[in-house]
Length: 268
Length: 238
Ligand SMILES: Nc1ncnc2c1ncn2[C@@H]1O[C@H](COP(=O)(O)OP(=O)(O)O)[C@@H](O)[C@H]1O
Ligand SMILES: [Mg+2]
Image 1 (cartoon, each protein chain N blue to C red):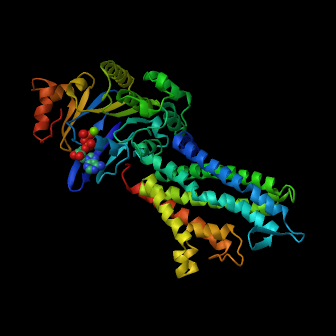
Image 2 (image 1 turned 45 degrees about the vertical axis):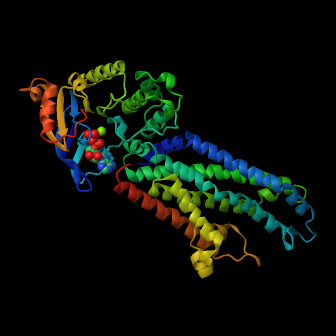
Image 3 (image 1 turned 90 degrees about the vertical axis):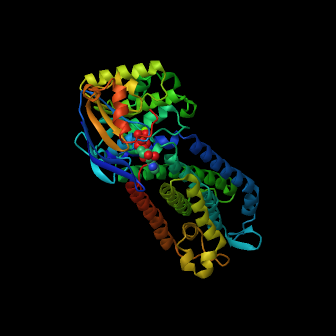
């Protein structure tokens, strides 16, 4: 059973890696990340050079915060931005099955539906994790350039690792939500559209206008709750523990739905 | 050995496959014949677990297809609506399939060589001609060196050379004691290949036996088919 899962997941990884669309999209996202960070380097470096003797930084005009906390948060949020685009990779990976009868071939090769979904989820999760790790590494490198004159150890401090781990967790789990939704919808486009709607829910703060409890159930809001540090100007809708529960429940339910749908429907 | 027992599939109210039962024995080539829309593809897709029957069961080597552990090593299939992603290269398509069933990678190159696609291995499937796509499908079916071959219209799009190659290859395959089931709507071509035939029309089996038995009492095999399928109101397209 374990060896069957391993071989099925390995095949799914090959499928991911041999799809030009996935490689292209991954390249574009990583490139975009580098570009955005490069744009900010000088402003951030200047803010770091003006850190006060008691360790306060003013990254945005008028907002003075403890430098260490603010910079570690910046490390995570700069990567976190890319989570707007990472789910597109997941949607393309999942959506390939519904082109040209690929799903039929997949089910001929791995007819046990649960095994196939498990292998696909493992492979997609692994791929997302590796892309997210590259993004995190790039953020770390830029952070080092920014803070090396003040505290060169900051990018590899325990706080920084925790922030990175939270980002990686969110990147993988949110990607898997889109992955499973796309498997259910049987279309890359619909998968991306539903993800966009979920994103807009957080951005527009519509659920939050009713009650923070509702907002806290939306994946991107849970991501914010997990990664950002609450402060005066930023109220979060729930704590990080609650956010983790939300972020595990979404992909779990979506994946189970995808497995059930795959088991019941004809392979088309 | 392949067994279909009372397979039924409806789209809406209309049965596409209606109470279909048959067995396919090893060591012979069995033709699955019928006009376009007769229900051949639907039957084969149910046999291999891609479509759910509304009724009945299908067994392959005594098991449901989905209960086979490394199915590609037991059954090779070329089916309607089960193909490669056009953007992927031919070789990559075969490699992932091989990995999923723990088939050695070199086998992917072997089957490409066998169907004469070695030169196009690194080309995207998008750029393949109809015949090349068909060859890739046959290569995929042969990947696991299976005991059983199920091929839906395998010679569609092949040139005469390709057709002859498939015919000879399948003859040898069956002669070594393996099971071959191939569907076709082309009588003449099947008459020269198959030993047995199952004839389907309008979703129902109208004849099942050796080619000789089926054509007995008719001028030719072809006229036997016309007579058999006309009764069921086949929609033409022979
Ligand atoms: N996915 C589908 N939805 C609705 N009708 C279908 C579907 N697939 C096949 N059919 C119908 O079922 C019948 C049998 O089709 P098929 O099995 O493809 O025939 P054949 O392979 O013998 O040409 C046809 O009338 C066809 O229109
Ligand atoms: Mg057909």
